[in-house]
Amino acid sequence: MADDATPQDEQRDEPEAPEAAAAAEETSPAEEAAPVEQPAAEAEAPAAEAETDAPQAEADVEEDEEEPAPREKPAIPGMDLQPDIVPEGVDPLARSEAEAEEEAAAEAAAEDEEVDDQPVAATIDLGASARYTATGKRKTAIARVILKPGTGQYTINGKTLDEYFPRVTLQKNIRQPLEAVGYEDRMDVIATMTGGGVSAQAGALRHGISRALLEADPNLRGELKRRGFLTRDSRAKERKKAGLKKARKRPQFSKR
Image 1 (tube, rainbow, N blue to C red):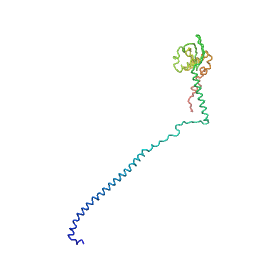
Image 2: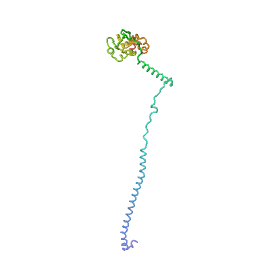
Image 3: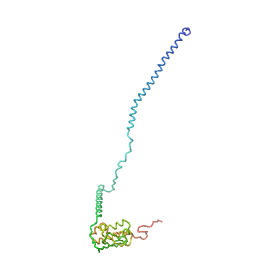
Image 4: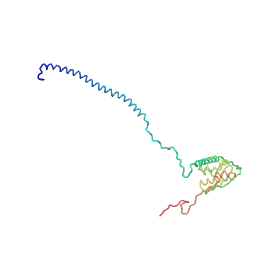
């Protein structure tokens, strides 16, 4: 059948080829436009999705910001409490009574101190010829004391108190008896010291002054004794023992 076609038919068929090409060209731009529109629609869809996701992202950020701080490790329970240990066999309720007794004793001691600060009322004859003598002792020191009316001067072995006893604490101890009776500025002290050391001689001088005040006014015995001025301090160095280095010290023990 194809062989039966004439040349005229071929000529008729040839012009149809450009028309088909033109039609194809006309359809091709439409076909090309369609794919272009599809990517635009696809681009619009992600934009819409991005717009919807933006509030969610902001909400997530706010949630992250509002998250509480990490929890701190709690302190040890009862760390600020003070332990109250009751010894075995002791009644815990009785402790309050003991504390009350201690407070009462402390108050009494404070009152005694206040009383000690106040001078004792004494009646001593301060005549021009008045002389009160006594002897004080401490360890191996001996103080022979003479009290007489004056201005509060101390003469010890021909020296003043500051020269003979440079220590302030010793000077304070020596002045205590006269200050207790309020005669520190109205009586002079003349003393002769022998034996002992510096501290022992200071104790002996205070003891001698106290005894001399007792000679001047016997009514001062109770107050002076209460303050310990009339008590003879019997403490002394213990003697060395045979076989020992000192009174108690022993030589090093050797087993072999």
